[in-house]
Image (cartoon, rainbow over all chains, first blue to last red; front, side, top):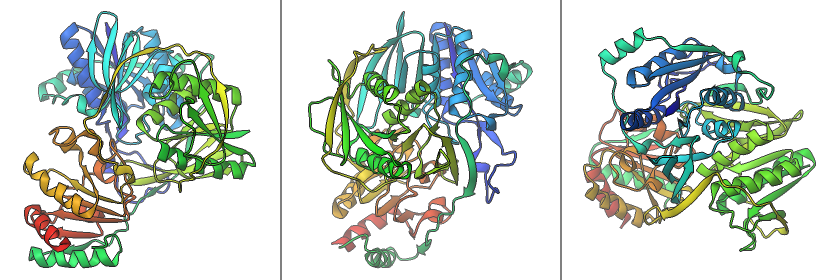
Amino acid sequence: MKVVVCVKNAVDELELTGSVNGKLQNPQTKMSIFDRNALEEAIRIKEKTGALVVALSLGDETAKKTVKEAMAMGADRGVLIQCDPTELDTLTTSYYLARFIQQENAELTLCSEGSSDTYSGQIGPMIAEWANQPFVGYARKIELNESGVRCEQAYEDRVDVSETKFPAVISVVSEINEPRYTTLLQIMQASKRTTESIPLQNLGGSEAPQTQVRVLDLTAQSMNRKKVLFEGEVDVAVGKLMEALRSEQVINV
Amino acid sequence: MTVLAYSEDPGLASEVYAGATEIAKQLGSEALSIYLDANTAPNSTAGKAVVLKSDRQLSGHPDLSLEAISEYALQRKPSAVLIGGTRFGRQLASQLAVRMRVGVLSDVRCLKVENGKLRGVRQVYAGKYSAEVVAPLPCVAVIPAGAYEKNVGTPSVETVTVGRASEKISHVETKPKGKVTVDIKNASIIVSAGRGFRNKEDLVLLDELAKKLNGAVGCSRPLSSDLGWLGEEHHIGLTGARVHPDLYLAVGISGQLQHVAGIKDSKIIVAVNKDKQAPIFQVADYGIVGDLYQVIPALLKHLG
């Protein structure tokens, strides 16, 4: 069995500071934090069934780091679809990922519910549509059987238990597992392995869509909060807080 | 040309419909709400609505809901489709967009039509930045809770029968997520717990406070995920609920970006933390630097 895990070379939101003049200039990147859960789940499937795990990313040279990290964690192969990711939106990104997945005849595709930088939650369900495969969203538990999977899907108000046959695309929520740490040795070993690079245009085709969504402007969000701190004797501090909340009219006791 | 609106969450449906009405006005067209199944009369949106029905129940089943809505949308050729930003909504919007071969604007507010394009504002990078995004019409837009004032009413209804959908996923069973008693998305007061609580039993303190304030209980991700002290429905943050109460009281929450992303739209944020350097104080209106085990009892006393 072949399992493809989509890993995004996401903008590192922790490293971003201040004004950006409408556009990020060479931001620091890292593997999208929620993708670690998808990768962990794929590696657990590999440990149980001997499946081959392919880590798949899309982006520029900096994304190789994310692919290698996935290999260090336990992916057997690392593949990068090469492009300028700022030229693509979710519709086009998912199309190229799906083309690769179909070429590889992967039984299972795993991704996270959304990325830690833009969190649109669109890539998984879009891949499934492009590849004409079933999509199982927000899985918090995955059980494999001979011909498919049984999943618990965590929606806001309920958990759906559903079954589907391979090939399928599943997105996972982060409570599904605790991702493993990679050792220094694993990282060093992975750095010596080669990643496979595929130019984007090699995956084209007659159906290839055009990028629809563009970012026109990007501005730093200031949290314009009052930041009034009450310190010292607890009872006095709480008294002052109560007074403030009453004058804000958010409590009426 | 119409602007279609859908959410399986009735409260959110009223807001999404309000957004659709605004866009329709700008386009000189009309907004139309979509409902699934004919078993209850639509009552969460005003104006006009269409009820899609089939020989099976569509709602509650992601696959069948998608098939019905996409069949209708592909035939209706709307100028835009607005979908409420729930977990199922995101999934639906994405799959529908591929079928329509159009773009999706994610979690957008303040939508405007401009030169045949739809423009909106969304938060990115865990809420550190806001982005102006645009897509040519037709397109799909995912609308977060709280973006529009509810437009509640009883619409005039047309019923449309859609074809029998083929299922790719078979639904085995639905389990309720424990007792779901919180409605944090619509709560006007939320008290929320973080790692500052030493153990699960201590959460009774927070419960008492919530009761006294007539508020809902929320938490940061570790409590619902790693520790499992509270159900997932209490989780507030980027991957949980994004809330917009009048008062948000963060108790023992350090203020990680992912949590803050979920509380930005609160009117007043209050933080209680013993660490003066905790990032939560940077995003709070009022803060008490102190031990929550002393602060909560004091709050309870003052509340009478």
